[in-house]
Length: 399
Image 1: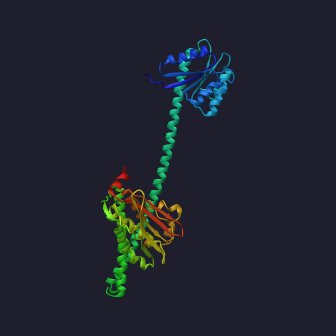
Image 2: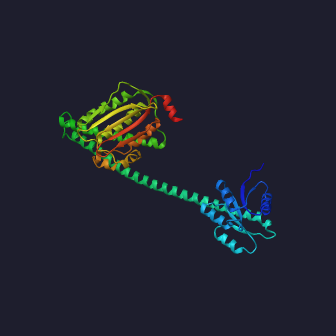
Image 3: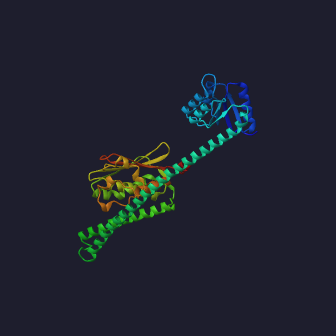
């Protein structure tokens, strides 16, 4: 059985005329049109309140409200289905008014009017569908133009960020390189004896700057691999306490030199996580290093973990540093982004690439975990990230 494509409502108070119109329309294209009848505007409104129609045809002269009043009601309700007015001979002025009010067409009820009903309905529906298609295309074009404009703005911002990033990294790399060169020059020129206390300090400065250069280069290499989709992780069960302890122990000397208290909150349990041990160390190292960088002397940094209800480990690095503005909390995890407020409070030569947190975010995503920050200006920051406890939990996060 052929599916009915269009439903038509005919409003006609004369039952004989109504049946003739219904038969004429439905027989014109068998199965394409289905006609429902109403004998008054009130009945038509009741029907239209519960159903939608492809086209509405109404006689002008009806008991109670007129066909023109039905058209006004349709306009008020925002009904866009085409409307055709049926008028008696001599009612052309009424028909013109209906056209001005938005009717698609009108038909004068003369002795031959039934012959023109099907083609006028065809024309009205085709025109309506054409207008709808045009509106859809125009809307689609507008939406695509908006999306294109947004993409262009993002690309422009990304280009600006890349330009700033290139300039910043060039400067940040040049600073430790110059420091290493000057330190080596002091030793090679005999100004500082490497065995003396002063020489040892000079060599220590060179070593710290070489470490900084290594860190920046590693960030750049990881970023390149992430961009190319070539960064891989090696997942296995590993002790979370061991990983955290390794990082905290490694930073104790730096923290003490800045008079910062670095605390690792031990727990009785010692859970394993299903993760890439080296990458987890890299993530915690980045967070602790940032905490030390943005925490003033006599400050406190705490590293801790807890277990969540969904079988994930949540690692937290909290500091008593300067804090991060609320509007920067999401942005700091994006590529090339750094908090200007935070950067204003540290020397230019120690700022880094601005890629560390974005790399952490990508690494944690690869572990099917999440990372987020909480902070308040002047009251420190907390960085949290999660890791799966077992392989089955990791696989569950994938599905």
